[in-house]
Amino acid sequence: MRNDEEARDHVDRLRAQWDLELPDLDTEPMAILGRAYRLSNLVRPSIEATFAAFGLDRGEFDVISTLRRSAPPYRLTPTDLYTLLMISSGGLTHRLDRLQKAGLIVRERSASDGRSSVVGLTDKGIALAESAFRADMASEARYLEGLGPEERKTLAALLKKLLVSVESQQAGEPT
Image (cartoon, rainbow, N blue to C red; front, side, top):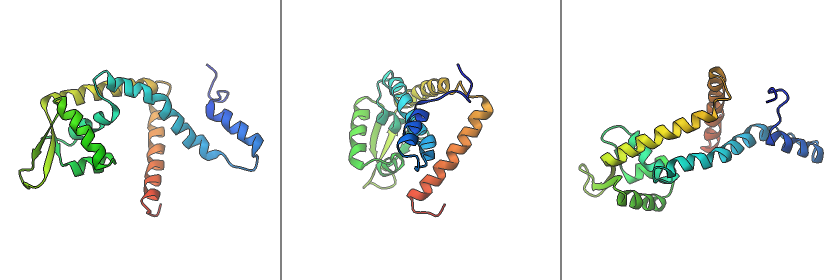
């Protein structure tokens, strides 16, 4: 493989084409956001295949992993879940129905407020969430093998800085 100075990727080719067509336009945002978008699209099928191997789709995994990382007793209200997952309550209900049929979650009345409910992981759901997450992290780690430890650390820090900035902008906060 050529060294980093000589290597050109898909985004480089797109930028070169735009430079010819619109030489006055700065395409630097594409160098960062275009690559992030392309990376996401390239790895998505592998991530989805990992979850499918466990009988889950991405949305179902998101629910059980959110519950699993919430700490014992691995229970959240539906409102907490759809807020954390940034989905509609209707979208969550559909996922919960499928997960309950699979025996991965239970829905119960709240002990503290009989008008509300909680969603909790079953033992089977806990085990599946952990197994699927471990497999996902192993799969995703393979994509990072082209970067050294310091490069990964630097990239993660820069992406975090960018994400915090974008999230602040989206929330209407000053950056």
